[in-house]
Length: 135
Image (cartoon, rainbow, N blue to C red; front, side, top):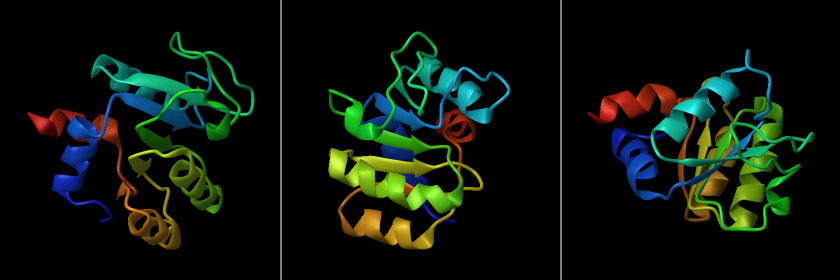
């Protein structure tokens, strides 16, 4: 497991309220759509990042992390594992405080690089599952 309970709690409660959700589109059947809704209900600002740059859940979308014109606290990654490392590197470059790889998204080298860059990171977990565990 990549991301102990203390790191999960720190990201969810202390990392900040602006979450870029990479892979989020208006496709309501995708997990990203539902998880983004949970994050919003938990008080997070959800910023969609998807090549279509469409607005989702009432928030303007952007084609890439680099296109977002304001600071992002957490980058939540819903892309396949082959692409996730690049997104983690972009999160570091963008000045994010933390990176969260969703269930099934695993890149051990990216995890190490991101942690070595000083960011908190969780991998192969879902915030929508972890939020209710906060109590």
